[in-house]
Image 1 (tube, each protein chain N blue to C red):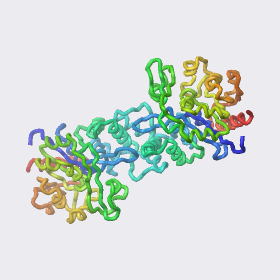
Image 2: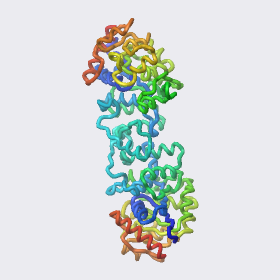
Image 3: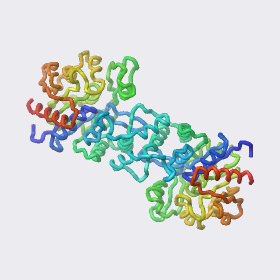
Image 4: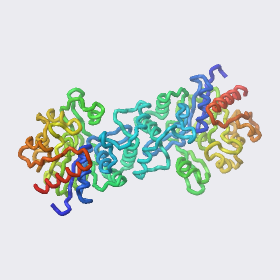
Length: 307
Length: 307
């Protein structure tokens, strides 16, 4: 790689955002870009909510709540209480501080700015140096086909029903295109790192956009396994793997899912045997502290150097 | 009047809302309706804000902040802080609890409900018995023609510039119609009371709507003077009267402004001499306590009985 390589990082929400924050500290300014999933995005209370983008922004700005894993630290929920009083939807919790983000994003989008421009504006105000790019400026919502409740909008399945209805398929049906900025970031990348996000509902929505997977395939791509010792660190992934891949949940199932796209996989120490026919790095991947994030980022970058 | 008369009340914001709340306690349930100014309404942060309707609802539900005169008691402003961080507009303060109202109203309006329906829904959730009717379901913003800054949107003039630019004219230029519900409430009224609101910017925007003044003229109409001893209890009225009516600010100027519409005027004790050729009741009109509101309401109703 060049002395100042261009690193591109693909991220979903919590886990992906944590490693991204470590990467941002591990790398020199200007060398890191992130492309973020927008398949979770949805309208709520008339506002356009981008859960993964917000988690990424809040984590990079070190404003995120560390125990809940979503939203802002020191958040209050007074608007929500008021909405409840009026009989409004209360299954998705928007905090008061958080509302400022959603209000401004929704306003700027209505004024005609692209989601890419809006995200850059939010990131700048939060003092974030890493380029944060929504994978698309168009709406491309993910749907979950369930065994019990038919087709559900993603947040309806994940949050409202707590991911209880069994998944049959994950559906990407929109005609959205990747943004020009996201495609250019891929073309400019020396290395692509897929964060420890859910492959089915955080990474696949991006890979399913026209031309994106093909462009990535020209680059060295590493991934970090979101499965640790057969469990997901967070979220419904461990239950989804047997349903969608007919494999037990393991780092190997993640490798199999990404297939020929990967040049290597980073897994939790001890999980190496589940991965076949692919360079694998075993290390500590569970990030409890900010130090953990930085160390994992450095390990990933060193692994890439060695390939 | 009938044993259970229909009383119709015309209201702007703070002063109008206070007496309305007294009227609601003075009268039997079901006999009071209020028509409320919507000329102040405007879009802010992408939300549709109705300052007078909200002040009326919050005052009737006894949720209003008593010292500020606007917004909710015990309010916080965390969303506003967040908006400020993102460089958004911060000259109009929307509180966190208050945001729940604006979010639901904006959402329901976008879903196709009328402002009348939305207001009824908010009032019901707040346990309000008095019928609260926006004068129109259509947007009919008030503009202020100023000597120094040209034409300004009403909130821009009142809040952002603190009513400093001198008023030349108040402009009602929309083609909005009164709502069918407001017109029916006028037709059903045995008595109309115009609250102690600013005649130029709270009551005139309603009177200027097609057909409204003509229908009111068929009814006995009383007003309560918002001018007390040559001063406005709140707001820029005392400065506006000489500019717009070429009279010194007085209860008499208020009487002259409404002209033949009035069958009587209620004024602060001692202000009677400024009013000519009209039945006048002098009493305590400044409402500092909830008890003051009830007593003024009873005095107004007794005055109407005697006419």
